Image (cartoon, rainbow, N blue to C red):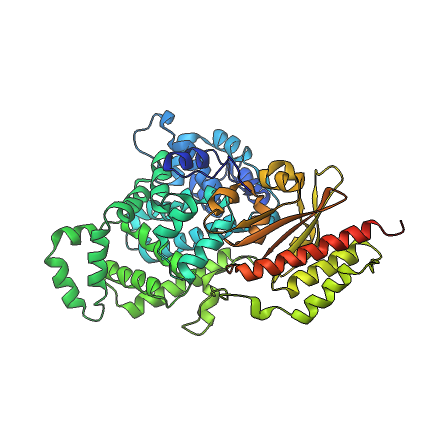
Length: 505
C-alpha cells in the first residue's frame, strides 16, 4: 500500500505542522484556572501557582505573551511576567479557547510527557532555586517548559513516545539515528527551532543549543564530574579551564540538568545516563554524589505526591524497587515460541467447517481472535465496519488495555483506513515505512499499538469489506515465517465469514 502523503521529513515542514497544533487541557484544570483569573483577590503569584499544574495552559499563555507582535524585545521569563503583559482578561479568553477534554480522555502519551516536565520542574525548584533565590521563577518555568516543543509532536503522533522509549532507553540505540529514522530530523534540532520560534525563555534555547551545537563543553564537564570521589582534584581541573568553569556555573544550566535527571530517571535510577546527570549535578552544586542522589530522590517523591496519576508512570515508584531494577523491558526477539499450534489448528478447523458452528458474529470473532493469538500474535484488535463504512467498532481484543473494547474509529479521518475499507488489503508497518504511514492512522489506534512492527488487514464478505484486523507481537519484529502463519489464519477467518454469511441459505 502506497500513499502520496507522508510525514514531514524536514525541519521546516515539522515546524509548520507542530506550530499549528492546539494542545488540549483537562476541563477541570481549565475551569480552575478560569476561576482564579477572574478572582480579584488572587495575585499573579497565586494564579501562577495554580497554572503550574497544567503545563499546556502555561505554555499557551507564555507563547501568547512572547509573540513578536507583543512589542517586547525580550521574552517573558516567567508566567507572572507573561500574565502581566497579557492582562487577566485576555489571559482568560486565551485559556477558554483551548480545547478541553474530560480528565479521563486526556491523551496518555501527552500526559506522560507533561508529567516528566512536572518532575523536572520539581527537581529544578528543589535542587537549584533555593541556591539561586533571585532566579527561582526563571528556573522553575524554564524547567517546566524545556520539553514543551515536543508536546505537540507527542500529541499528534502518540506512538512515538513508546517507540523512542523502547529503542533509545531500553535497547540503547543512538537517539539521533532513531529520531532521523522516525522523523527525518533530530529531536534536539526540532526542539531548538520551536523554542526559538515560540520565543520561549532564553535558557530553554540555550539548553538545546548546547546539546545540538556545543557538546564539547558538556563532555569536558562530564569527564571532570566522573571523578566525584576527589572534589579537590575536580576543583583544580576547573581552575585550569576558566572558560569551562564560567560555563558550568551559569544558572541556565540548571534547566538542562533538571530535565536530564527527569528523563533518565523515567527509565532507570541506576543506568549510566542517570548516573552521568547525577554526577554533573553534583559538580554543578559542589556536593558529593551520595548527597546529590538523596536530594534527587527526595524531589522525586515530592513530585509524585503532587502530580502522580494511576494511569501514568512516575519514577518515584521505582525507588521502592531493587536498585538495578528497570521499568522498560526489551520485547522478545520473536514470539513464535509462544504460539500454540494445537489451539491454532482447532480454531482454524472451526472456521473452515463446511457448516458454520457460530450462532452469531460475537462467537465467530471470538474464534478469530483466539486463532490469531494462538498463531503467535499476543496483541490483537478486531473491528467491524458498519454498512456505509463510516464507523469501525471494536468487537474483540487481546493483550490490550481494557479501553480497547470500547474503541470507535471514524475512517474518514484516516487515509490508510479508507483505503483498507475500499477493498481487502494488508499493510505491514516496519521501521522503514512507519514515518510514511503512521501519521495517516488514528491516534487512538497508535496509542494501543506503540509499535514499529504492525499488521493491518481488511477482510471482505460478499465482495464488501466487513472487518479490520490489527495485530503485532508486542512490538517485536515480525518474521517472514510469522507473516505466513498470519496470512493462513486470515484465510481461515475469511472462509469462516463466507460460510457464516451463507447460513440458512
